[in-house]
Amino acid sequence: MSFQNRGINAKTQKVKDYYKKHIKPIVFQKPGDGHIRVFERGGAGSAQLDNPPAVSYKPAMPKVTFMPLGQSFEVEDGTTILVAAIRNGVKLRHDCTEAICGTDKVKILAGQNNLSPMDDNEELTLSMLESDAADRLGCVAKVLGDVIVEIPAE
Image 1: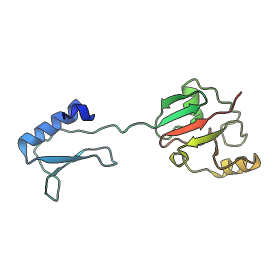
Image 2: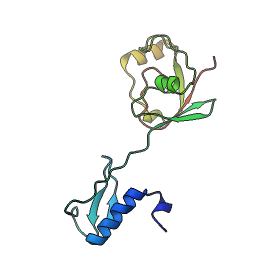
Image 3: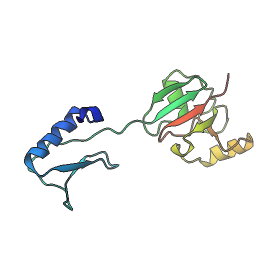
Image 4: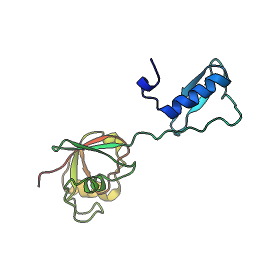
């Protein structure tokens, strides 16, 4: 199976070919820091080369899906649900953007653990609104991974 069929881009393939030609066969690993590291098979450390080609990859951006619309959008890590909605033309009522009014309350259908922790204002406002554990305020809940959000009907 070619590397293109496995989703590895042409630049990564070029680097892999370079390493195959100049050192022992290698294994690529993609750690969380966004860089590809090269290890010799059976070796304990990184392979060292003179002027190896630089390679990095861009991790996939988090995706927010708005229900019942069924529309999904990629957003930058740390974007609030409200900003994601506004930037993508999804109507979500909001009056204050400071977790005080509660007008931008949404229900998280999936990915609750992919959101930022609640701050004091959000906790207080949601408790006053007698919300359940799946509710968050779109103005302050930051997206850190894929989430599915149910927005209220207008």
